[in-house]
Length: 151
Image 1 (cartoon, rainbow, N blue to C red):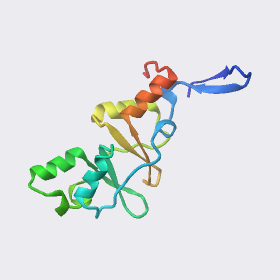
Image 2 (cartoon, helix red, strand yellow):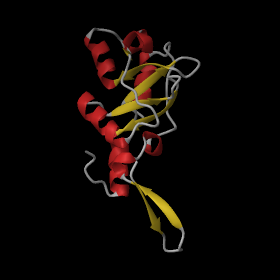
Image 3 (spheres, rainbow, N blue to C red):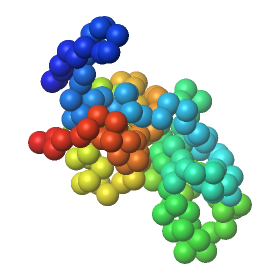
């Protein structure tokens, strides 16, 4: 990790971490809406209209089981399935990409770029959902930290 000590106007010293060395935990959204596998498709679709392009599907222990994306909802319609007649489990993508909180932003950028995903669930070592990180979060962090290339 590349860190520099900087002095603030008040004379205090703080550590500044290079953009590419920031962790996912530092930029992720911790308040995440998720749904149970038995949630009806139309309920999950309503959640997406509130600004979530994908909804993590978790069990009672908050372990990540899958994700329902806008793509999954459209695919269900294309197959002739009405959302009220399907559950999240019926239409979710299983084994979704996920990252851990300690993942660096540099690695996250590679994952987002290579997978063509917009957002990725963040899970603990026990596969429990602890957040979601999106491209938008990376862009915000880049602006805040004066991003330089992360190679």
